[in-house]
Image (cartoon, rainbow over all chains, first blue to last red; front, side):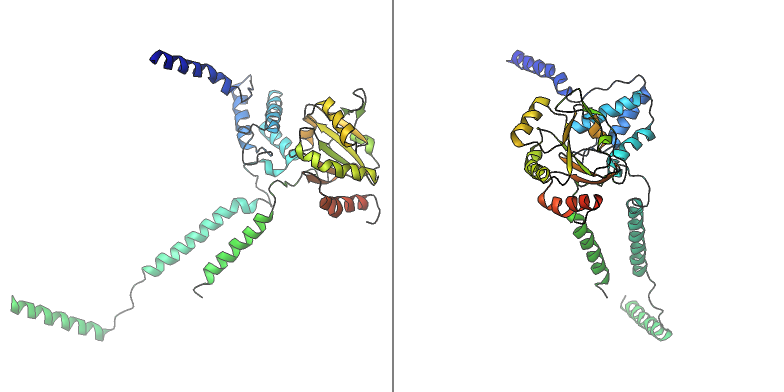
Length: 159
Length: 176
């Protein structure tokens, strides 16, 4: 029984390279080029399945774009050149990390603006909660003192 | 007064949602609009020895329709293209994208051929230059070879009547 289990486990292991085959391989002469490829494939959006980057998507277009990018890297193009190539064809939308420009300023400044707004609101709420009570007038203070004196003398007598 | 802040927040969120949910995320504005049509030279479907290049269309307003037999929505828009070609208002050039050439020929024979010429982009490399991502796509190119409009997805009668044809007429210098 256990040998049969082992055999099927081994059979599954044999299938592993098959499943890894799904992602096309790109070989680069240098480590820098390979990491640039990974970086770009992670930062660029696949337009067919818009919530995936080019690295994750198995769409045919993503495969083609991975091939295109790897060719550009091997022919010595740098990151900016490749990003320019992609933006010229697919627009700013292709960038998961949008560049700072007039049309994307709300995207970059928005979170900061909301954070500032929240901070302002928080400060206001905290301040209003810790405000010092209104000054007590002398008359009320005198009355309170008298009450305390009375009760303490009473308790002394009792004790 | 107590309700002023929640009311402002509600109106803001409702405003953003009203606008945002009405947008189609598949409609990505093309950076090609207003730019010269990407150049290429590709063999034609009818004759692999013959080349087609967008330069050949200079002086004419034309449509570039990117399609493939593997694309289901291309079949939906095809009768509309055939009808448009029959009216001879504008030349349509086909770009057969990553397709089986024999199947493409059968498609045009069986369903009708609306294209003045069909270029074959076997590797899909030219599709990348045109920013092609959602089959089918249709571009309007003016007489100077400048891209004026891009339609993503099957051309609908509405898109044709309200956007594409009026634009073509304007570019051709006719009043629609």
